[in-house]
Image (cartoon, rainbow, N blue to C red; front, side):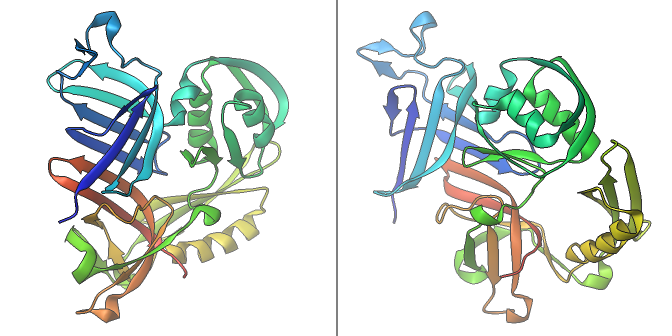
Length: 317
């Protein structure tokens, strides 16, 4: 039986023990999160490390979490303490580098600005940036955090925003250059699942396609099933005719015969959102398929080392 192994670094302090760890990572949310649960009566130099001003856990401390099976481990989370709950046991809440984008405010008015200029003015130097090209037109920011601006970009311009591998991605969901393909065999690798098979003709999708124009106006169209599950896609400076053509092609990515839902597997290999699962079955090979990963929930501790994978749309190998 493989032995669980962890290495947790908080500031300059390193631990190789923990009660439980929970990590949630997805492109659907701005911030990836982790929660460490550790015994309250940990001591250092004979003193409890959680007592008052002597506590070694402080908001803003940098954290790295490595997990694996002895003697190997891989970096599973990097971020900053957002809160410490002195309960029994202690709970330490951690956020990825989005934490940094909540700590200061920004004020500026633009008569006309593009997305990359806005992001560099607002965030430049704090974190690497990778964004799509987009003209935002007139844009005014008054005493708000960079994260609040990202929230506005998501609500108004439908630009997904997340951090992966130390880079802020804006306007993309699946990052081709970060993608790793993993072959997962149902009968060999899957512990539990809530997968549901749907045929293409059973799937109803309504796709709203939005084209942002240079003058900050929008063209919006809808294609697909009027009573279908809502999806949104955004584009830049497209005519209504071109937008409709692209939308009718894009909706085919969501209307497919295949699995919806997810599964639970062991903690290795490390899987991240945006990776691709090549799902295979010995018993039902006709249902083999290739899917993007939308969300990964990792747990480590008393109940073992697990990854719960939420599948997204089908992917090409």
